[in-house]
Amino acid sequence: ALLVLATPAATLLLGIFLQRELVEAPAAAAEGWQLFLAALAEGLLQHHLYGSLLFPFLALGAYPCWLLLWNVLFWK
Image (cartoon, rainbow, N blue to C red; front, side):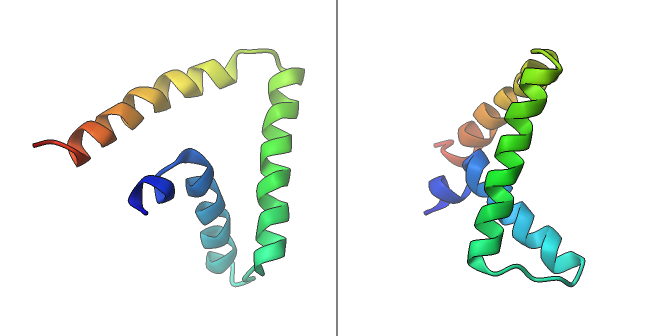
């Protein structure tokens, strides 16, 4: 369960629901899913429009942190 909750997609989805709770406008499951799909589509559109500058920089920052997280979680 932790593996699924820590994936970037689940983190984005939970972040959307958390943001809606913080602005005191809770989203239903269907509305949250639509906001999630809209965020993904907007990210793809911006990546296409602005070229491949921002996405690789974010990936370079997030991927080592992602590996470090799993290294810490499964340290024996």
